Image (cartoon, rainbow, N blue to C red; front, side, top):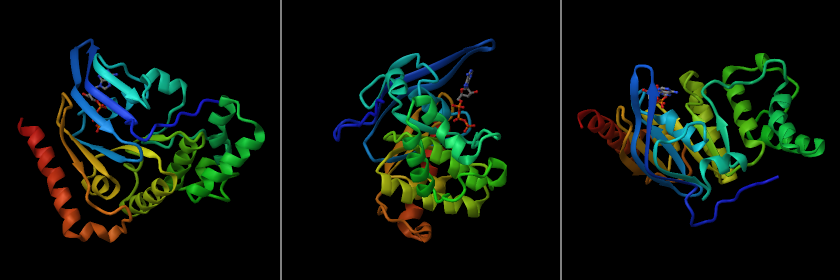
Length: 265
Ligand SMILES: Nc1ncnc2c1ncn2[C@@H]1O[C@H](COP(=O)(O)OP(=O)(O)OP(=O)(O)O)[C@@H](O)[C@H]1O
């Protein structure tokens, strides 16, 4: 079983002048343009930008689900393909995507079964990740017996189960109401703090990006470019009411300005 560990001084994600043009029947679609970014180990990086600016495409390049047409990309020092084979990341999608005929435990065990973990290790890992997302006791339930927020937590547990250093999350809480989203944001920060993982997180929400992140990457409308990378001065320990502080409001303002600048270029 290959588990990759990032070395302390090597970026987990390194994109250098990344470009991606889709060739479609209607002509070329330039999705990413000259995207350069280093994501250090343990960072929580949010990607924010208008619809269609290439946020998902960038995540899919990291996961080797798309192939860039220019520039270079490494994940833990490997090519995206190598990183995929080494299972260097877990991927959480907007929809929880749980198999309805499998229990929550069965869903979490599935990738572990495929990877050839022993039954004992599958059981140990499933219990540990269910505890991490506060779903202990729900292992034998089916997805339809859980609320949307709980399903999304189960999908996070599944992505955590093989213990990759990197978690890719594509608008995981976009479909949830604000109260549930707030709670899951708090839980995700706790989980990040506890596990020390690197997280790349796509969102449309400025408060969510500012609340969660150590780094906020602001992107422009298509072709997606990076217009600003904001390093957050907020402390690691963040109660929800930090959102009312002047520091928080100032960062949110800078994100908004970055988004606006992207439209004007
Ligand atoms: N497989 C594909 N073939 C052709 N065009 C594509 C493909 N995938 C994405 N695109 C286009 O590339 C651009 C970027 O799409 P992407 O989904 O990455 O944007 P996004 O920023 O994640 O958008 P949203 O916030 O709405 O999810 C869009 O114009 C989209 O239509």
